[in-house]
Image (cartoon, rainbow, N blue to C red):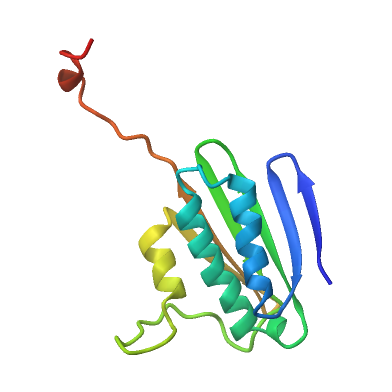
Length: 146
């Protein structure tokens, strides 16, 4: 079971907690932003990581649901994944070089401008924000441009 809602610049998608639904979470972000959006690739990657965590490490993956919310403007994208909870809070652990997992939250630390975790009544809400920062060039370098 899944459902989606659109409210201005916000999309909300409720998905079954199965691994194949992570691709639908990625598609929501990709379609919402469009492939030409400068933050597209990082947003899709980070969404994949936190949606996968919801499926693998929470009750969402045991027959439950998870929710993906995308809020965006011309300069900022915020993605939030809420799961149905787990016995312990997600941890930002450092994976060994040969580990096959454990890199999702460290990727958030590396790529997101801001991110966070809200744990309420056992449920986990992991979010990130990416901000488009225009490259700035010193005015003196622009003086000779016509």
